[in-house]
Image 1 (tube, rainbow, N blue to C red):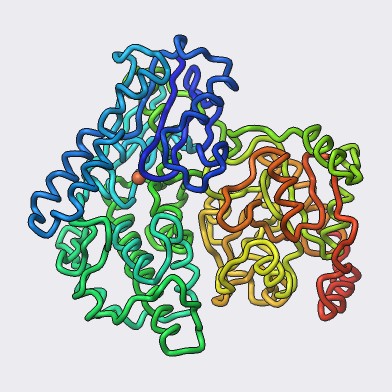
Image 2 (image 1 turned 180 degrees about the vertical axis):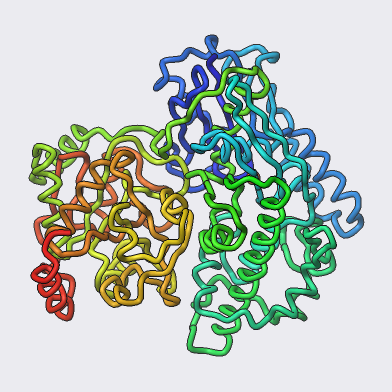
Length: 602
Ligand SMILES: [Fe+2]
């Protein structure tokens, strides 16, 4: 069976193609349209998926949209009516937005692809999240937890999934929390209050939380009330997201927490105001973690299972995920590389395959690389046309050369194979650099990322060496496979991994399995042979405001505009003629030579 999955119109549209039960490809619209967080109907992503899979639209057995648009419309209408007359200003806007395209998805898909309407199906939003988390994970029986802002009505679901020996599949979501009681909305409300972009900058709240203390838990208790069944409700008087799209918090919220931060004001962590914002972030982060741990603990008790599959946008919170792993009793926690709505395109297609059409269960390859592949020839052509020297090496030589450049303190744009599906660069569209000196972090923030200094960069390490540098609990390496957990850097390594160690001593580490990313694994080994530490700084290959690069040409353009010294597409390399000085900083040289001499190859 050939099934196309689509997610669109909320945030990060995407398409995915599943053939005979196995994903063939998946891509977010933003990676092709080059508009960050593109939420439009994903025409480019659909076209690319069909072309890549060599499937004509008329050959498709089904097209599955990731949520039930009419139910979502019903929620918006109901909430607006409940809030009338307060909602009268925002109501026409909400209706226009919803009626514009979202409700009429069947017609839009049918006319875009020319497929008959009876081939178009809809899944529940949280069923799509659940399928993306469970059906793509290497487990046969697991508890399932999903949490996001909101789908149709559900904001959190809990249940279990089973892939049975007879080839049948079951996903049963027995429990549901409904809008407006939403962990995602709670976190997004603080995201807006702290002056960040909702649905985009939630991770900045998590980063800022490490600078604060959870001093506002009493205030938080007024907002979030625990219920006897272990769930929670949000006190509606503190929120406005349920009635208007223009502001998510009420004046009562301001009375409780103080004035909101303007997005244009820098955060000065030395000032009382800056510390208040950091404490707010720490408080909401603590509440989110505590709730998730309690819900997961209860799910563990109810199911008696040892694996948990966790999906939905809330599963991007790596600090909370690490606590769930450590405290809920689950032995393994699987978070997919695209737990948010983009991943629902793949989830919806897999759900339809297994649960609508009852196709036989199949293993889904355990990697995030489902997008367009990089074309090294394209890089060579672009660089030559631009008058830049190009080196086309064999593969081992290219890896050794890149390791030399990194060990000399240079910043490398690293493009390899198919691009990642999901928000994180996991070694196929990454900017890599030496992780040792704080100056490297500052240089990346200043010259490439143009971002707040409180935001940490992530390290990447081979699985064989991960425990030496990072304090991973049992199951931690699995969570770190797709950079889904934040774990402590071992204290003795923090000063030597200063560019990737957050202020609280933690890091959102990616642990690389040779089988999943052999070239990145080889590069880490080669870097370790030079420096004694096989750890690199890994950040997404993009500049502020742009999506992660997809094609070699986009990588080249970013390389030319930003402070990247070397660009690699496969084993084709381009270097800037005037490079940064070798070695990241004087103070590093002592330990560097010491560690190379002392420990030898790692
Ligand atoms: Fe969602």
